[in-house]
Structure formats: C-alpha cells, structure tokens
Image 1 (cartoon, protein in one colour):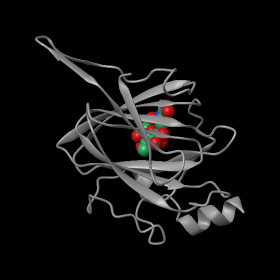
Image 2 (cartoon, rainbow, N blue to C red):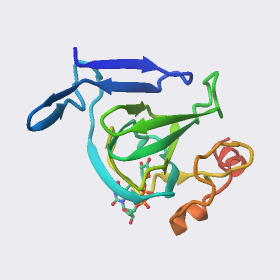
Image 3 (spheres, helix red, strand yellow):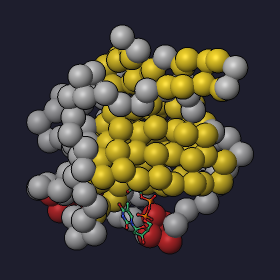
Image 4 (cartoon, rainbow, N blue to C red):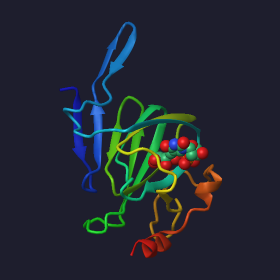
Length: 177
Ligand SMILES: Cc1cn([C@H]2C[C@H](O)[C@@H](COP(=O)(O)OP(=O)(O)O[C@H]3O[C@@H](C)C(=O)[C@@H](O)[C@H]3O)O2)c(=O)[nH]c1=O
C-alpha cells in the first residue's frame, strides 16, 4: 500500500500521504487510487499562485457541492477548511493544514468551504473535484471573517477582486437558514 490516510479533527477531512519512489531519473508518486479513496471525480483543476496569495474561502451549493482532493505540485501552502454542515458537531469550526509538495495532500468532502494561502515563493496546486464547476452555484466567505478567526499564515494577502468582496459568515448563514 503506497498511501497513508489520517482523518483529522474535523470528521471527513483526510490528510493523505503517498510513498515517493526515488531513482536515478527523479521520482515517482501515486496521487489517487480509487481503491484507497473511493471517490468519483468529475473535474481536475490546476492553479499557479505567487507567494502571499490567498484563494478562498469557496464552496458550491448543493446539488453542485464539490468534494476536493487538494494536491500541491510545487511549493507549500496553508490549506484551510470550514465546516458548513449544519448537522455536524463541528459546524462552523475551521482547520488549518500545512501541505507541502510531494509530502501531503488533503481530501475535503462536500459541505466545507475551502481556501489556501501560499507560503513558498510560489505554488502550483492541482485539485480534483467530485462535481463540475457551476458559476451559478459558486459561493464564498470572506477569508478574514472575524467570527471565523482563522489564523492565516499570510497577513497582507494578494486577493482576487471577487475574494475581496465575499460576504461575511453571518450573512452566509442567514441566507442558508
Ligand atoms: C474554479 C473555476 C474557475 N473558473 C474560471 C472562473 C474565473 O474566470 C477564473 C478564476 O476563477 P476563481 O477566481 O474562482 O479561481 P480560484 O480563486 O482559484 O477558485 C478556486 O479556489 C480554491 C480555493 C477552491 O477551493 C476551488 O474550488 C476554486 O473555487 O476561472 C472556471 O472556468 N472553472 C472552474 O472550475
């Protein structure tokens, strides 16, 4: 078995490591195997970001909610998830996980908002999604929402205009109630 999987403090969030096979050419690594993580993916994305970028916090509304396998291809990111599952004992709680290329990946099931901050000079991040992108279902929460109080590793982030204007947690929850 080339993988180790550890469920973290928020139920359903899986930290995944995969064995690195080194040889005289370089190295080889498995990223995903259906027998290890029994998830069906519908889309695969790839983004490049410079240091101090924060992307997030993003999610899609059901029935377009996405589970995501986050794979840093280069660099080092602080990955952040927020539990949006109303019936979850950890509803509204967040988790920050350090992800380094070749060392760690994260599986984030449906029902979480997701984002990351780039700690290295740059980072290429690939992520596989269980549902296709749907701009009408796309939602977000302001990364620095005071109620969520996430200890971001980047204090003066580079953001997209869209992410600078995301609503606060209290408005998101009110809309969903
Ligand atoms: C996410 C996405 C974006 N796009 C387009 C929309 C937009 O014009 C451009 C850039 O989109 P965004 O600014 O939303 O990209 P980005 O901020 O990188 O969005 C991503 O952030 C991370 C944290 C996630 O968890 C992802 O699910 C996704 O929401 O790409 C697609 O065509 N397909 C997609 O699947």
